[in-house]
Length: 395
Image (tube, rainbow, N blue to C red; front, side, top):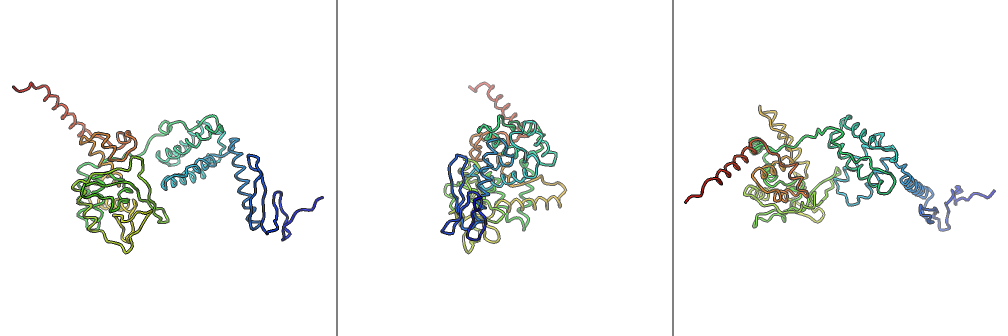
């Protein structure tokens, strides 16, 4: 019986392991293409960690090819190919992976998943209290992940081709624009409250430009053209839970745009610059400096600042007034801007440009909601125009 190979400390080496004269360890293996490969390490423990990773990778490749990969493994494989994903997108991926790890469905082999199983999973999530938008987000990742497996001929059919709305009821809360009265009440309250009037300019700018709140806080001094009265929008500012800032391009390819300054916005931006305290050190983020809106510590604001502030305002107002305000968020302010311009008769392509939507259907179907009053006004206007057209021309 041949003597077992050992290292300089007398430890028995496994198949493929070698202790070299230079003091390093080597592991030899064959990859899935049949090629001979080598890895090196300075200690046996380090080498065996590398071996474990290699074995796991090989096993994962074989499992995927045979359709034995789990839903979680398939999702991880799909996400690993999204190298250019934005910070918020990566957060969404992490949320969905963590959700799958809590569900039995996540551990099923993909070859066994049928359309009825996929639908049953969506129904279970909804019954467990997950919102329609959350279930849609989960399906929004699983559908292309399974499509990838179908394209690779691992499975015959994508089980997530159905519409979520055909399986569970859409209980998502529809965003409603502020009415003229609610808008007036809200602005008057903010302006007259000494503690909250510091947010007035930010709120006014959102209401008069339709900017996303992350776009607002991404603005720097160099983005303001007071001479030509326009604002350049080309970035979003976000921050993670570790307080690390990120600069990202606008949400869509159409998000880079110019927004005209109304007189109200011109004044709000002028006041913002006059009231802005210059910090000891202007924070530079990905080459950008001079952010307009700073917190009490002199650091650039992010969306959560205004989201929390507006919630406190609305809660306080509703605690002290008989007629409550409806739910208000920074996105409701953007929604209000779009709806007001649509009701005023702005053509949809111009409105699409101002909102930074890549798809005009987003502008048409999500943000513009008419009421009986606006429909009545439009009807009366058209009727009047028709009557004017019927009158004989004066001699």
